[in-house]
Length: 630
Image (tube, rainbow, N blue to C red; front, side, top):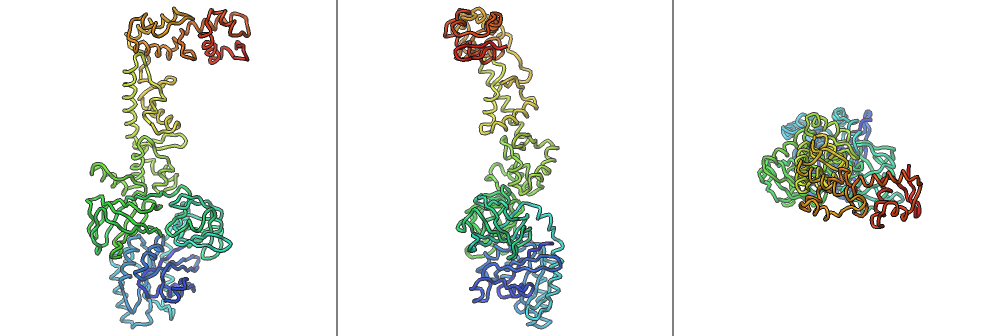
Protein backbone atom coordinates (compact mmCIF):
# COMPACT_ATOMS: atom_id res chain seq x y z
CA UNK A 1 0.00 0.00 0.00
CA UNK A 2 1.31 3.44 -0.96
CA UNK A 3 1.66 6.01 1.86
CA UNK A 4 1.07 9.73 1.26
CA UNK A 5 1.42 12.52 3.83
CA UNK A 6 -0.40 15.79 3.15
CA UNK A 7 -0.08 19.01 5.13
CA UNK A 8 -2.68 21.75 5.03
CA UNK A 9 -1.73 25.41 4.65
CA UNK A 10 -3.67 28.63 4.50
CA UNK A 11 -5.09 31.63 6.33
CA UNK A 12 -7.12 31.34 9.53
CA UNK A 13 -10.81 30.55 9.10
CA UNK A 14 -10.44 29.53 5.46
CA UNK A 15 -11.85 26.10 6.24
CA UNK A 16 -8.81 23.82 6.46
CA UNK A 17 -10.12 21.68 9.33
CA UNK A 18 -13.62 21.52 7.88
CA UNK A 19 -12.22 20.38 4.54
CA UNK A 20 -10.12 17.64 6.18
CA UNK A 21 -13.23 16.48 8.05
CA UNK A 22 -15.22 16.41 4.81
CA UNK A 23 -12.50 14.34 3.10
CA UNK A 24 -11.86 11.88 5.95
CA UNK A 25 -14.77 12.07 8.38
CA UNK A 26 -12.33 12.96 11.18
CA UNK A 27 -12.30 16.21 13.18
CA UNK A 28 -8.59 17.14 13.45
CA UNK A 29 -9.25 19.71 16.20
CA UNK A 30 -8.48 17.70 19.35
CA UNK A 31 -7.97 20.38 22.04
CA UNK A 32 -10.93 21.65 24.16
CA UNK A 33 -9.78 25.23 23.53
CA UNK A 34 -9.89 24.62 19.78
CA UNK A 35 -13.48 23.36 20.10
CA UNK A 36 -14.46 26.33 22.28
CA UNK A 37 -12.79 29.03 20.14
CA UNK A 38 -13.49 27.45 16.77
CA UNK A 39 -9.88 27.84 15.55
CA UNK A 40 -6.99 25.44 15.15
CA UNK A 41 -4.21 26.16 17.65
CA UNK A 42 -1.91 23.15 17.40
CA UNK A 43 -1.36 20.32 14.96
CA UNK A 44 -4.29 18.04 14.17
CA UNK A 45 -4.31 14.72 12.36
CA UNK A 46 -6.66 12.69 10.18
CA UNK A 47 -6.43 9.84 7.71
CA UNK A 48 -8.25 7.91 5.00
CA UNK A 49 -7.67 5.12 2.50
CA UNK A 50 -8.45 5.94 -1.11
CA UNK A 51 -7.97 3.39 -3.89
CA UNK A 52 -5.16 1.55 -2.12
CA UNK A 53 -3.40 4.71 -0.91
CA UNK A 54 -3.17 5.42 2.81
CA UNK A 55 -3.50 9.20 3.03
CA UNK A 56 -2.47 11.04 6.22
CA UNK A 57 -3.31 14.67 6.89
CA UNK A 58 -1.48 17.10 9.15
CA UNK A 59 -3.85 19.99 9.78
CA UNK A 60 -1.98 23.14 10.79
CA UNK A 61 -3.14 26.37 12.46
CA UNK A 62 -3.67 29.36 10.20
CA UNK A 63 -3.35 32.19 12.73
CA UNK A 64 -0.11 34.20 12.54
CA UNK A 65 0.45 33.62 16.27
CA UNK A 66 0.71 29.88 15.65
CA UNK A 67 3.07 29.81 12.66
CA UNK A 68 5.64 28.05 14.85
CA UNK A 69 3.16 25.22 15.37
CA UNK A 70 2.46 25.19 11.66
CA UNK A 71 6.18 24.79 10.97
CA UNK A 72 6.40 21.83 13.36
CA UNK A 73 3.89 19.96 11.21
CA UNK A 74 5.01 21.11 7.76
CA UNK A 75 8.40 19.37 7.87
CA UNK A 76 8.35 15.97 6.24
CA UNK A 77 5.08 16.29 4.32
CA UNK A 78 4.90 14.85 0.80
CA UNK A 79 2.39 17.38 -0.55
CA UNK A 80 0.52 20.50 0.49
CA UNK A 81 -3.19 21.12 0.42
CA UNK A 82 -3.26 24.92 0.15
CA UNK A 83 -6.66 26.23 1.23
CA UNK A 84 -8.00 29.60 0.03
CA UNK A 85 -11.54 30.71 0.94
CA UNK A 86 -13.59 31.89 -2.02
CA UNK A 87 -15.18 34.66 0.03
CA UNK A 88 -11.83 36.18 1.11
CA UNK A 89 -9.32 35.05 -1.53
CA UNK A 90 -5.56 35.36 -0.85
CA UNK A 91 -4.71 36.66 2.64
CA UNK A 92 -1.45 37.31 4.62
CA UNK A 93 -1.09 33.78 6.03
CA UNK A 94 -1.89 32.35 2.61
CA UNK A 95 1.24 34.07 1.33
CA UNK A 96 3.37 33.22 4.38
CA UNK A 97 2.35 29.56 4.38
CA UNK A 98 3.05 29.33 0.65
CA UNK A 99 6.52 30.83 1.20
CA UNK A 100 7.15 28.30 3.97
CA UNK A 101 6.06 25.44 1.72
CA UNK A 102 8.37 26.74 -1.02
CA UNK A 103 11.30 27.11 1.37
CA UNK A 104 10.76 23.55 2.59
CA UNK A 105 10.99 22.29 -0.98
CA UNK A 106 7.48 20.82 -1.16
CA UNK A 107 6.87 20.47 -4.91
CA UNK A 108 3.60 18.52 -4.90
CA UNK A 109 0.28 20.05 -4.06
CA UNK A 110 -3.31 20.91 -4.78
CA UNK A 111 -5.15 24.16 -4.07
CA UNK A 112 -8.68 23.93 -2.67
CA UNK A 113 -10.83 27.05 -3.11
CA UNK A 114 -13.16 26.46 -0.18
CA UNK A 115 -16.57 27.95 0.65
CA UNK A 116 -17.35 28.06 -3.06
CA UNK A 117 -21.03 27.70 -2.24
CA UNK A 118 -20.97 31.18 -0.68
CA UNK A 119 -19.94 33.14 -3.78
CA UNK A 120 -21.10 33.68 -7.33
CA UNK A 121 -19.51 31.82 -10.24
CA UNK A 122 -17.87 35.07 -11.32
CA UNK A 123 -16.30 35.57 -7.88
CA UNK A 124 -15.13 31.95 -7.85
CA UNK A 125 -13.40 32.46 -11.20
CA UNK A 126 -11.77 35.66 -9.95
CA UNK A 127 -10.37 33.89 -6.86
CA UNK A 128 -9.02 31.02 -8.99
CA UNK A 129 -7.26 33.58 -11.18
CA UNK A 130 -5.79 35.33 -8.11
CA UNK A 131 -4.52 32.00 -6.76
CA UNK A 132 -2.96 31.10 -10.10
CA UNK A 133 -1.17 34.46 -10.10
CA UNK A 134 0.02 33.80 -6.51
CA UNK A 135 1.48 30.44 -7.57
CA UNK A 136 3.34 31.83 -10.57
CA UNK A 137 7.07 31.17 -10.28
CA UNK A 138 6.68 28.68 -7.41
CA UNK A 139 7.02 24.86 -7.50
CA UNK A 140 3.21 24.71 -7.28
CA UNK A 141 2.66 26.85 -10.37
CA UNK A 142 1.08 24.02 -12.38
CA UNK A 143 -0.82 22.32 -9.55
CA UNK A 144 -4.61 21.78 -9.83
CA UNK A 145 -6.94 24.39 -8.35
CA UNK A 146 -10.21 22.82 -7.27
CA UNK A 147 -13.27 24.81 -6.07
CA UNK A 148 -14.93 22.87 -3.23
CA UNK A 149 -17.56 23.16 -0.52
CA UNK A 150 -17.26 21.24 2.74
CA UNK A 151 -20.98 21.92 3.28
CA UNK A 152 -22.47 20.73 -0.03
CA UNK A 153 -19.71 18.28 -1.01
CA UNK A 154 -19.12 20.06 -4.31
CA UNK A 155 -15.67 19.29 -5.77
CA UNK A 156 -14.62 16.78 -3.11
CA UNK A 157 -14.36 13.88 -5.56
CA UNK A 158 -12.30 16.02 -7.93
CA UNK A 159 -10.06 17.06 -5.01
CA UNK A 160 -9.52 13.43 -3.96
CA UNK A 161 -8.58 12.50 -7.51
CA UNK A 162 -6.08 15.38 -7.70
CA UNK A 163 -4.45 14.34 -4.41
CA UNK A 164 -4.26 10.70 -5.56
CA UNK A 165 -2.60 11.80 -8.81
CA UNK A 166 0.04 13.66 -6.79
CA UNK A 167 0.61 10.52 -4.71
CA UNK A 168 1.52 8.50 -7.81
CA UNK A 169 4.68 10.60 -8.32
CA UNK A 170 6.14 9.63 -4.94
CA UNK A 171 8.96 7.02 -4.68
CA UNK A 172 7.41 5.31 -1.69
CA UNK A 173 9.56 2.16 -1.53
CA UNK A 174 12.89 3.99 -1.79
CA UNK A 175 12.36 6.12 1.31
CA UNK A 176 10.99 3.18 3.32
CA UNK A 177 14.26 1.31 2.70
CA UNK A 178 16.35 4.05 4.31
CA UNK A 179 17.20 4.36 8.04
CA UNK A 180 14.46 5.43 10.47
CA UNK A 181 13.89 9.13 11.01
CA UNK A 182 10.90 10.28 13.06
CA UNK A 183 10.84 13.97 14.12
CA UNK A 184 8.78 14.20 17.32
CA UNK A 185 5.96 16.76 17.34
CA UNK A 186 4.04 15.48 20.40
CA UNK A 187 4.97 13.70 23.64
CA UNK A 188 2.48 12.52 26.25
CA UNK A 189 1.78 9.59 28.59
CA UNK A 190 -0.99 6.99 28.51
CA UNK A 191 -1.95 5.27 31.75
CA UNK A 192 -0.75 1.68 31.76
CA UNK A 193 1.58 2.23 28.79
CA UNK A 194 3.89 5.10 29.71
CA UNK A 195 5.47 7.71 27.41
CA UNK A 196 4.28 8.04 23.82
CA UNK A 197 5.63 10.22 21.02
CA UNK A 198 4.11 11.00 17.65
CA UNK A 199 5.48 12.33 14.39
CA UNK A 200 5.52 11.96 10.64
CA UNK A 201 7.83 9.07 9.71
CA UNK A 202 10.15 10.75 7.21
CA UNK A 203 12.09 7.62 6.23
CA UNK A 204 12.53 3.98 7.14
CA UNK A 205 10.31 1.34 8.70
CA UNK A 206 9.66 1.26 12.44
CA UNK A 207 8.67 -2.00 14.14
CA UNK A 208 7.81 -3.22 17.62
CA UNK A 209 10.84 -3.92 19.85
CA UNK A 210 13.13 -1.94 17.55
CA UNK A 211 16.08 -0.14 19.17
CA UNK A 212 16.15 3.56 18.39
CA UNK A 213 18.33 6.54 19.24
CA UNK A 214 16.67 9.56 20.85
CA UNK A 215 18.37 12.68 19.51
CA UNK A 216 19.98 15.05 20.23
CA UNK A 217 20.60 13.31 23.59
CA UNK A 218 21.97 10.14 21.99
CA UNK A 219 19.96 7.92 24.32
CA UNK A 220 19.03 4.38 23.21
CA UNK A 221 15.34 3.55 23.66
CA UNK A 222 13.02 0.74 22.55
CA UNK A 223 9.74 0.85 20.64
CA UNK A 224 7.41 -1.07 22.93
CA UNK A 225 4.29 -0.48 20.77
CA UNK A 226 3.75 1.15 17.36
CA UNK A 227 0.50 2.67 16.10
CA UNK A 228 -0.56 4.24 12.82
CA UNK A 229 -3.71 6.38 13.01
CA UNK A 230 -4.62 4.93 16.40
CA UNK A 231 -4.33 1.29 15.30
CA UNK A 232 -1.54 -0.93 16.60
CA UNK A 233 0.66 -2.25 13.79
CA UNK A 234 3.65 -4.56 13.56
CA UNK A 235 5.45 -1.96 11.44
CA UNK A 236 5.01 1.67 10.41
CA UNK A 237 6.47 2.86 7.11
CA UNK A 238 7.72 6.18 5.78
CA UNK A 239 4.90 8.55 4.92
CA UNK A 240 2.68 7.56 7.85
CA UNK A 241 1.67 9.44 10.97
CA UNK A 242 3.18 7.24 13.66
CA UNK A 243 2.82 6.89 17.44
CA UNK A 244 5.50 5.05 19.40
CA UNK A 245 5.21 3.84 22.99
CA UNK A 246 8.77 4.02 24.28
CA UNK A 247 10.67 2.01 26.87
CA UNK A 248 13.87 3.22 28.49
CA UNK A 249 12.87 6.86 28.86
CA UNK A 250 10.59 9.04 31.01
CA UNK A 251 8.01 11.53 29.74
CA UNK A 252 10.02 14.34 31.36
CA UNK A 253 12.87 13.48 28.96
CA UNK A 254 10.70 13.90 25.85
CA UNK A 255 9.62 17.02 23.97
CA UNK A 256 8.72 18.40 20.57
CA UNK A 257 11.81 18.88 18.42
CA UNK A 258 13.58 15.65 19.32
CA UNK A 259 14.10 12.87 16.78
CA UNK A 260 13.93 9.09 16.85
CA UNK A 261 16.42 7.50 14.46
CA UNK A 262 18.30 4.35 13.62
CA UNK A 263 21.26 4.35 16.07
CA UNK A 264 24.33 6.04 14.65
CA UNK A 265 22.53 7.30 11.54
CA UNK A 266 22.10 11.02 12.17
CA UNK A 267 24.66 13.68 13.00
CA UNK A 268 23.94 15.99 15.94
CA UNK A 269 25.50 19.42 16.06
CA UNK A 270 25.23 22.99 17.33
CA UNK A 271 26.72 24.32 14.09
CA UNK A 272 25.50 23.89 10.51
CA UNK A 273 26.89 25.05 7.18
CA UNK A 274 23.93 25.99 4.99
CA UNK A 275 22.77 27.71 1.84
CA UNK A 276 20.57 30.49 3.24
CA UNK A 277 18.00 32.42 1.14
CA UNK A 278 16.09 35.55 2.16
CA UNK A 279 12.58 36.33 0.99
CA UNK A 280 12.24 39.47 -1.18
CA UNK A 281 10.34 41.35 1.53
CA UNK A 282 12.69 40.41 4.39
CA UNK A 283 15.14 42.84 6.01
CA UNK A 284 18.78 42.38 5.12
CA UNK A 285 20.78 39.94 7.24
CA UNK A 286 24.26 40.52 8.66
CA UNK A 287 26.74 38.25 10.40
CA UNK A 288 25.90 38.17 14.09
CA UNK A 289 22.15 38.56 13.63
CA UNK A 290 19.89 36.22 15.59
CA UNK A 291 17.04 34.17 14.14
CA UNK A 292 14.80 31.29 15.12
CA UNK A 293 15.68 28.13 13.20
CA UNK A 294 12.99 25.58 12.27
CA UNK A 295 13.97 22.10 11.05
CA UNK A 296 11.11 19.59 11.04
CA UNK A 297 9.68 19.99 14.57
CA UNK A 298 12.84 21.67 15.98
CA UNK A 299 12.62 25.34 16.95
CA UNK A 300 15.91 26.74 18.27
CA UNK A 301 17.70 30.07 18.39
CA UNK A 302 20.49 30.66 15.90
CA UNK A 303 23.25 33.21 15.30
CA UNK A 304 24.15 33.73 11.65
CA UNK A 305 27.58 34.07 10.08
CA UNK A 306 27.29 34.95 6.38
CA UNK A 307 30.27 33.36 4.62
CA UNK A 308 29.81 34.99 1.21
CA UNK A 309 30.39 38.68 1.85
CA UNK A 310 29.16 39.01 5.41
CA UNK A 311 25.78 40.54 4.42
CA UNK A 312 22.73 38.96 2.79
CA UNK A 313 20.33 41.26 0.90
CA UNK A 314 16.58 40.63 0.51
CA UNK A 315 15.79 38.11 -2.22
CA UNK A 316 19.37 36.83 -2.35
CA UNK A 317 21.11 33.70 -1.07
CA UNK A 318 24.56 32.90 0.29
CA UNK A 319 26.48 30.22 2.15
CA UNK A 320 26.38 30.69 5.91
CA UNK A 321 27.10 29.00 9.20
CA UNK A 322 24.44 28.86 11.88
CA UNK A 323 25.48 28.58 15.53
CA UNK A 324 22.54 27.02 17.35
CA UNK A 325 21.41 27.48 20.93
CA UNK A 326 20.68 23.75 21.14
CA UNK A 327 21.96 20.80 19.08
CA UNK A 328 19.80 19.42 16.28
CA UNK A 329 19.89 16.24 14.20
CA UNK A 330 20.37 16.98 10.50
CA UNK A 331 21.71 15.64 7.22
CA UNK A 332 22.75 17.39 3.99
CA UNK A 333 19.73 18.30 1.91
CA UNK A 334 17.45 19.03 4.87
CA UNK A 335 15.28 22.09 4.24
CA UNK A 336 14.66 24.63 7.00
CA UNK A 337 12.94 27.95 7.68
CA UNK A 338 14.23 30.95 9.62
CA UNK A 339 12.13 33.66 11.31
CA UNK A 340 12.78 36.90 13.15
CA UNK A 341 11.44 37.37 16.65
CA UNK A 342 10.80 41.09 16.44
CA UNK A 343 8.83 41.85 14.45
CA UNK A 344 7.70 38.23 14.19
CA UNK A 345 7.97 37.15 10.56
CA UNK A 346 9.28 34.44 8.31
CA UNK A 347 12.35 35.88 6.61
CA UNK A 348 13.82 32.97 4.70
CA UNK A 349 15.09 29.44 4.73
CA UNK A 350 17.52 27.16 3.05
CA UNK A 351 19.20 23.80 2.83
CA UNK A 352 21.76 22.10 5.08
CA UNK A 353 25.13 21.53 3.37
CA UNK A 354 27.15 20.10 6.26
CA UNK A 355 25.73 19.01 9.63
CA UNK A 356 29.13 18.62 11.35
CA UNK A 357 31.28 21.45 10.02
CA UNK A 358 34.41 22.93 11.42
CA UNK A 359 34.34 26.68 11.87
CA UNK A 360 35.12 27.95 8.37
CA UNK A 361 38.45 29.75 8.28
CA UNK A 362 41.45 30.12 6.01
CA UNK A 363 41.95 32.02 2.77
CA UNK A 364 38.79 33.05 0.97
CA UNK A 365 39.75 31.08 -2.15
CA UNK A 366 40.21 27.82 -0.20
CA UNK A 367 37.01 28.48 1.72
CA UNK A 368 35.04 29.07 -1.48
CA UNK A 369 36.37 25.83 -3.02
CA UNK A 370 35.31 23.88 0.08
CA UNK A 371 31.84 25.43 0.05
CA UNK A 372 31.48 24.81 -3.69
CA UNK A 373 32.31 21.14 -3.12
CA UNK A 374 29.66 20.89 -0.40
CA UNK A 375 27.08 22.04 -2.96
CA UNK A 376 28.35 19.68 -5.64
CA UNK A 377 28.09 15.89 -5.96
CA UNK A 378 27.99 13.39 -3.05
CA UNK A 379 31.55 12.27 -3.83
CA UNK A 380 32.81 15.86 -3.71
CA UNK A 381 31.21 16.36 -0.30
CA UNK A 382 32.73 13.10 0.94
CA UNK A 383 36.14 14.18 -0.36
CA UNK A 384 35.90 17.39 1.68
CA UNK A 385 35.21 15.40 4.83
CA UNK A 386 37.95 12.84 4.14
CA UNK A 387 40.43 15.68 3.65
CA UNK A 388 39.26 17.34 6.87
CA UNK A 389 39.97 14.09 8.78
CA UNK A 390 43.63 14.41 7.69
CA UNK A 391 45.90 11.68 9.11
CA UNK A 392 43.18 10.37 11.45
CA UNK A 393 41.17 8.98 8.53
CA UNK A 394 37.39 8.72 8.28
CA UNK A 395 35.45 5.50 8.81
CA UNK A 396 32.37 4.60 6.75
CA UNK A 397 30.26 5.13 9.87
CA UNK A 398 31.63 8.68 10.28
CA UNK A 399 30.92 9.56 6.66
CA UNK A 400 27.50 7.89 6.74
CA UNK A 401 26.42 9.92 9.78
CA UNK A 402 27.66 13.17 8.26
CA UNK A 403 26.25 12.55 4.79
CA UNK A 404 23.00 10.83 5.75
CA UNK A 405 23.87 7.96 3.38
CA UNK A 406 23.88 4.28 4.42
CA UNK A 407 27.48 2.95 4.79
CA UNK A 408 27.20 0.82 1.63
CA UNK A 409 26.24 3.93 -0.37
CA UNK A 410 29.24 5.77 1.08
CA UNK A 411 31.57 3.09 -0.34
CA UNK A 412 29.95 3.38 -3.77
CA UNK A 413 30.17 7.18 -3.71
CA UNK A 414 33.86 7.16 -2.73
CA UNK A 415 34.80 4.61 -5.45
CA UNK A 416 35.42 7.32 -8.13
CA UNK A 417 37.73 9.14 -5.71
CA UNK A 418 39.77 5.97 -5.25
CA UNK A 419 39.94 5.42 -9.02
CA UNK A 420 41.22 8.98 -9.41
CA UNK A 421 43.87 8.43 -6.71
CA UNK A 422 42.42 11.15 -4.46
CA UNK A 423 41.44 8.84 -1.60
CA UNK A 424 42.58 5.46 -0.29
CA UNK A 425 40.92 2.80 1.85
CA UNK A 426 43.24 1.46 4.55
CA UNK A 427 41.84 -1.86 5.72
CA UNK A 428 41.90 -2.35 9.45
CA UNK A 429 39.22 -2.60 12.14
CA UNK A 430 37.48 -0.35 11.38
CA UNK A 431 38.49 0.41 7.78
CA UNK A 432 39.08 4.10 7.17
CA UNK A 433 39.40 6.41 4.21
CA UNK A 434 42.38 8.76 4.00
CA UNK A 435 43.13 11.39 1.39
CA UNK A 436 46.14 11.15 -0.88
CA UNK A 437 47.17 14.60 0.35
CA UNK A 438 47.25 13.34 3.95
CA UNK A 439 49.40 10.35 2.95
CA UNK A 440 51.80 12.65 1.08
CA UNK A 441 52.13 14.86 4.14
CA UNK A 442 52.73 11.82 6.37
CA UNK A 443 55.37 10.61 3.90
CA UNK A 444 57.23 13.92 4.11
CA UNK A 445 57.08 13.98 7.90
CA UNK A 446 58.22 10.36 8.18
CA UNK A 447 61.25 10.90 5.94
CA UNK A 448 62.21 14.04 7.87
CA UNK A 449 61.78 12.30 11.24
CA UNK A 450 63.95 9.33 10.22
CA UNK A 451 66.67 11.59 8.81
CA UNK A 452 66.82 13.73 11.96
CA UNK A 453 66.93 10.69 14.23
CA UNK A 454 69.75 9.09 12.25
CA UNK A 455 71.80 12.31 12.37
CA UNK A 456 71.46 12.38 16.16
CA UNK A 457 72.38 8.71 16.70
CA UNK A 458 75.79 7.78 15.34
CA UNK A 459 75.88 4.26 13.99
CA UNK A 460 72.11 3.92 13.85
CA UNK A 461 70.72 2.57 10.59
CA UNK A 462 67.07 2.92 11.53
CA UNK A 463 64.63 4.25 14.12
CA UNK A 464 62.10 2.57 16.36
CA UNK A 465 58.89 1.86 14.43
CA UNK A 466 56.83 2.47 17.53
CA UNK A 467 58.47 5.84 18.21
CA UNK A 468 58.14 6.90 14.58
CA UNK A 469 54.43 6.09 14.38
CA UNK A 470 53.76 7.70 17.77
CA UNK A 471 55.24 10.93 16.43
CA UNK A 472 53.30 10.74 13.16
CA UNK A 473 49.99 9.74 14.81
CA UNK A 474 50.10 10.90 18.45
CA UNK A 475 46.36 10.24 18.87
CA UNK A 476 46.11 7.17 16.63
CA UNK A 477 45.07 3.77 17.88
CA UNK A 478 47.52 0.86 17.29
CA UNK A 479 45.47 -0.74 14.51
CA UNK A 480 45.24 2.50 12.56
CA UNK A 481 48.98 3.12 13.08
CA UNK A 482 49.68 -0.32 11.57
CA UNK A 483 47.52 0.50 8.55
CA UNK A 484 49.22 3.86 7.96
CA UNK A 485 52.67 2.30 8.42
CA UNK A 486 51.86 -0.34 5.80
CA UNK A 487 50.67 2.37 3.39
CA UNK A 488 53.87 4.37 3.86
CA UNK A 489 56.01 1.25 3.35
CA UNK A 490 54.11 0.43 0.14
CA UNK A 491 54.88 3.96 -1.06
CA UNK A 492 58.60 3.37 -0.46
CA UNK A 493 58.88 6.01 2.26
CA UNK A 494 60.80 3.61 4.51
CA UNK A 495 61.49 -0.10 4.91
CA UNK A 496 60.79 -2.35 7.88
CA UNK A 497 63.57 -4.43 9.46
CA UNK A 498 62.40 -6.08 12.67
CA UNK A 499 61.41 -3.31 15.06
CA UNK A 500 63.13 -0.63 12.99
CA UNK A 501 62.06 1.70 10.22
CA UNK A 502 64.95 2.35 7.82
CA UNK A 503 65.41 4.66 4.86
CA UNK A 504 64.96 2.82 1.54
CA UNK A 505 68.20 1.02 0.65
CA UNK A 506 69.82 1.86 3.99
CA UNK A 507 71.10 -1.42 5.42
CA UNK A 508 74.45 -0.43 6.93
CA UNK A 509 76.58 2.46 8.26
CA UNK A 510 79.19 4.73 6.63
CA UNK A 511 82.73 3.29 6.13
CA UNK A 512 84.33 5.42 8.88
CA UNK A 513 81.79 4.31 11.47
CA UNK A 514 82.01 0.71 10.24
CA UNK A 515 85.74 0.58 11.02
CA UNK A 516 85.16 2.04 14.49
CA UNK A 517 82.32 -0.43 15.15
CA UNK A 518 84.65 -3.32 14.28
CA UNK A 519 87.17 -2.09 16.88
CA UNK A 520 84.37 -1.85 19.48
CA UNK A 521 83.20 -5.38 18.65
CA UNK A 522 86.79 -6.64 18.98
CA UNK A 523 87.03 -5.11 22.45
CA UNK A 524 83.96 -7.05 23.58
CA UNK A 525 85.15 -10.27 21.95
CA UNK A 526 88.49 -9.93 23.70
CA UNK A 527 86.73 -9.44 27.03
CA UNK A 528 84.68 -12.63 26.55
CA UNK A 529 82.75 -13.41 29.75
CA UNK A 530 84.52 -10.55 31.50
CA UNK A 531 83.13 -7.84 29.21
CA UNK A 532 84.34 -4.24 29.34
CA UNK A 533 82.08 -1.43 30.44
CA UNK A 534 81.13 1.23 27.85
CA UNK A 535 83.56 3.60 29.59
CA UNK A 536 86.36 1.02 29.17
CA UNK A 537 85.55 0.74 25.47
CA UNK A 538 85.59 4.52 25.05
CA UNK A 539 89.06 4.59 26.59
CA UNK A 540 90.22 1.70 24.41
CA UNK A 541 89.08 3.11 21.08
CA UNK A 542 89.75 6.75 22.04
CA UNK A 543 86.55 8.19 20.55
CA UNK A 544 83.65 10.40 21.61
CA UNK A 545 81.39 8.62 24.17
CA UNK A 546 78.14 9.49 22.31
CA UNK A 547 79.45 7.99 19.09
CA UNK A 548 80.65 4.85 20.89
CA UNK A 549 77.28 4.42 22.64
CA UNK A 550 75.49 4.77 19.32
CA UNK A 551 77.70 2.15 17.67
CA UNK A 552 77.27 -0.24 20.60
CA UNK A 553 73.51 0.08 20.05
CA UNK A 554 74.03 -0.58 16.33
CA UNK A 555 76.07 -3.74 17.08
CA UNK A 556 73.34 -4.95 19.45
CA UNK A 557 70.69 -4.49 16.77
CA UNK A 558 72.91 -6.16 14.21
CA UNK A 559 73.41 -9.15 16.56
CA UNK A 560 77.18 -8.82 17.00
CA UNK A 561 76.68 -7.94 20.67
CA UNK A 562 74.03 -9.14 23.14
CA UNK A 563 72.36 -6.94 25.75
CA UNK A 564 71.61 -9.10 28.81
CA UNK A 565 68.83 -8.41 31.31
CA UNK A 566 70.09 -5.73 33.67
CA UNK A 567 72.12 -3.95 30.98
CA UNK A 568 75.25 -6.13 30.65
CA UNK A 569 76.63 -6.18 27.07
CA UNK A 570 78.54 -9.27 25.94
CA UNK A 571 79.90 -10.43 22.60
CA UNK A 572 77.49 -12.77 20.84
CA UNK A 573 80.40 -15.12 20.19
CA UNK A 574 80.93 -15.48 23.96
CA UNK A 575 77.28 -16.34 24.53
CA UNK A 576 77.31 -18.84 21.67
CA UNK A 577 80.37 -20.49 23.21
CA UNK A 578 78.52 -20.85 26.55
CA UNK A 579 75.62 -22.54 24.73
CA UNK A 580 77.98 -24.87 22.85
CA UNK A 581 79.80 -25.95 26.02
CA UNK A 582 76.53 -26.54 27.92
CA UNK A 583 75.24 -28.83 25.16
CA UNK A 584 78.58 -30.64 25.00
CA UNK A 585 78.71 -31.21 28.80
CA UNK A 586 76.23 -34.09 28.75
CA UNK A 587 74.28 -32.56 31.65
CA UNK A 588 70.52 -32.25 31.44
CA UNK A 589 70.26 -29.75 34.32
CA UNK A 590 72.39 -27.60 36.62
CA UNK A 591 72.11 -24.96 39.33
CA UNK A 592 73.59 -21.48 39.57
CA UNK A 593 76.67 -22.64 41.52
CA UNK A 594 77.53 -25.27 38.92
CA UNK A 595 77.07 -22.73 36.14
CA UNK A 596 79.34 -20.18 37.86
CA UNK A 597 82.01 -22.77 38.50
CA UNK A 598 81.93 -24.15 34.94
CA UNK A 599 82.43 -20.77 33.32
CA UNK A 600 84.35 -18.94 36.07
CA UNK A 601 81.64 -16.29 36.46
CA UNK A 602 80.69 -13.98 39.26
CA UNK A 603 77.04 -14.13 40.38
CA UNK A 604 76.68 -10.53 39.10
CA UNK A 605 77.07 -11.75 35.51
CA UNK A 606 75.89 -15.35 35.89
CA UNK A 607 72.28 -14.48 36.78
CA UNK A 608 71.70 -12.08 33.80
CA UNK A 609 73.34 -14.59 31.44
CA UNK A 610 71.08 -17.41 32.69
CA UNK A 611 68.00 -15.19 32.29
CA UNK A 612 69.06 -14.48 28.72
CA UNK A 613 69.46 -18.22 28.06
CA UNK A 614 65.94 -18.72 29.48
CA UNK A 615 64.57 -15.99 27.18
CA UNK A 616 66.25 -17.51 24.09
CA UNK A 617 64.92 -21.00 25.00
CA UNK A 618 68.35 -22.53 25.58
CA UNK A 619 67.44 -23.30 29.19
CA UNK A 620 64.30 -23.45 31.31
CA UNK A 621 64.15 -22.67 35.03
CA UNK A 622 62.61 -25.34 37.23
CA UNK A 623 62.82 -24.38 40.90
CA UNK A 624 66.46 -23.66 41.74
CA UNK A 625 67.80 -25.51 38.70
CA UNK A 626 67.92 -24.98 34.95
CA UNK A 627 67.03 -27.65 32.45
CA UNK A 628 68.87 -27.66 29.13
CA UNK A 629 66.31 -27.61 26.34
CA UNK A 630 66.78 -29.59 23.08
